[in-house]
Amino acid sequence: MATNLVDPPQEGTTQRFPTLPDHLEKNLVKVFKLLSDETRLRIMLYLAQEEELFVTALCERLNQSQPAVSHHLALLRDAGLIEARRDGKHNFYSICRSHFHSIMGELFNSFNDPNENIIRIDNFVLTQDLS
Image 1 (tube, rainbow, N blue to C red):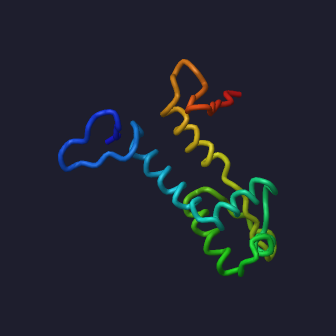
Image 2 (cartoon, one colour):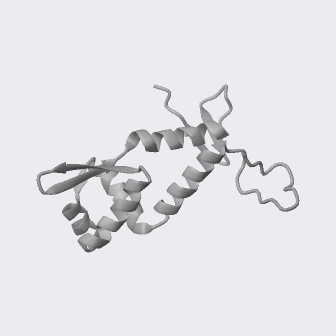
Image 3 (cartoon, one colour):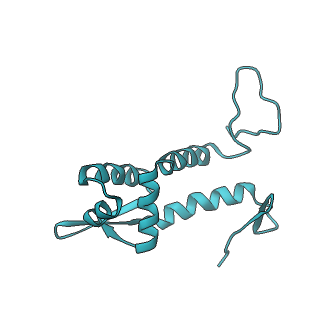
């Protein structure tokens, strides 16, 4: 059941988000919880910058042990945010752009006027590339 912050909450219920489909709400909470961790956010930024990195390269950039980095990678992979490719002894990781774009596209469409491809929030304007 979608939630709506405009209407007052009914007795015994909690409202958390403006009108969002339940599946999107759950996906967004999961993604933002994962990315609220500095290490996981840095992993995503490095992968966005480099396209693909193997674990050792991420360990060097993050200055963390291989088990610690592998733990963070497993969480991101389980959430569908990154994907792994094995080449010889190395696992290479990259952002799963289709999944990430799907979630962000649904979020954009939830707040977007169907007749426009922009969202205005105070002085910020978000646009969606329709190409």
